[in-house]
Length: 452
Image (cartoon, rainbow, N blue to C red; front, side, top):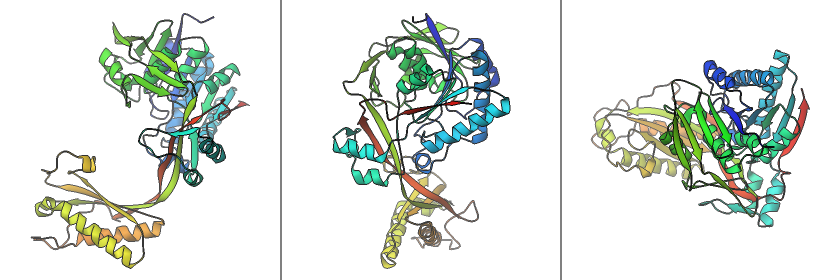
């Protein structure tokens, strides 16, 4: 029998971002039925998926988990973590599991753990390509076998079903690999019989915790209470509140279509959604619907090694150089291309000019800068670190002493904030896979139950 309501506590926007203990305690005082947190994102780029490293700090993640696990065990409610370790591949999941088991030993806690992997075998993806079950997202080329084979790590974005399986198995702490962000918040409500549209939309807000409140914060706690006809959002801090505008704006967050939000197995239809302020900084949401797809698909994410990067950071203060910076950098790049041809060397060279168009590049609408100084980041990517180091050094020294027209001072064109001026940044990864794959069942996602 479906309960009248169910309460979900979201402590922080990403595990490791932290939260005030006072807010967390207030959230626990609302007697939540589950503590859930999203631990990952593709926002920091492909490096973390490709390298197997977390973009969050271990000590910070352990601090957050300590509070969540102690509270969850004491309240006898599940604690759910999705996209563990940032990118949700096996290396990230193992990293998070190690922290959890370390905490359980230190605190003398025993608990049943559910660990759900999201890693996808390369051959499974190749089979999907050959059977026409892999499709590209808008703007991307079809996935090919060679790209799959070059990929370092592949994960699929799981929906609520593997979490429900772990809850049915009685797992008190659930750690999952890459997951659809709202899934950790929607799983228990859907398992208990609440409407999937309401549960997933609530999860879409809760995944970013207090970012959807005003003023927004990724490091504060919020609560969502779902019932049969809608859900209510409540801040756990007196410093912030939900408003109709803040919740509606966050619903549009990172969406190509403001009304139709795709996810595993279907999409949210928000054409009939109503946001209603209840007072006391609370907002109620109604009208969200989930529409199932005829074919269940999940998103694949993959990253492959692209090369090795070296950067050099410099400042420019000469107004003559600033006024002709585009021509100067074009000339420098041409010189480097000639040098590479002579030495049979290949490398990618680029300049990021902050104060002019360093953020938007060629899409910057303001073509003429009024800046009195510019920051230039010289970037070189090559197949080997030594080649990247060498070409960055040559590019930097050529720009440093380049004799541009009307130059007055000849001591050097660049001011370097650091010594050494060149920084070896290490391996560079790119996303090689951002496609959908059909699923006949949920065997991609494997649950392991651990008595700890």
